[in-house]
Image (cartoon, rainbow, N blue to C red; front, side, top):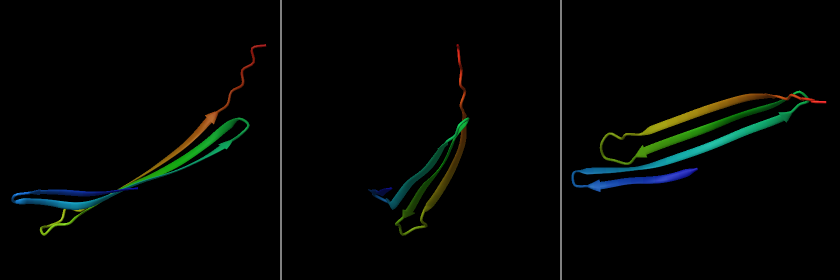
Length: 79
């Protein structure tokens, strides 16, 4: 989790806001006789809240990902 304070103060222009970022991940693996199963998911969030006297430029993003994987096991015998 990350917290950031963004501030720009120049003549005739003020930008001030707070940003929060998060990243969460989950994964699980199951070993089988002929194949291995791996599943995973992650969530990324980004929120910005402007502190201003004019119309705020607030932003909120969420991204969710999911990954299922099957690994096939092969046995090779040369003799």
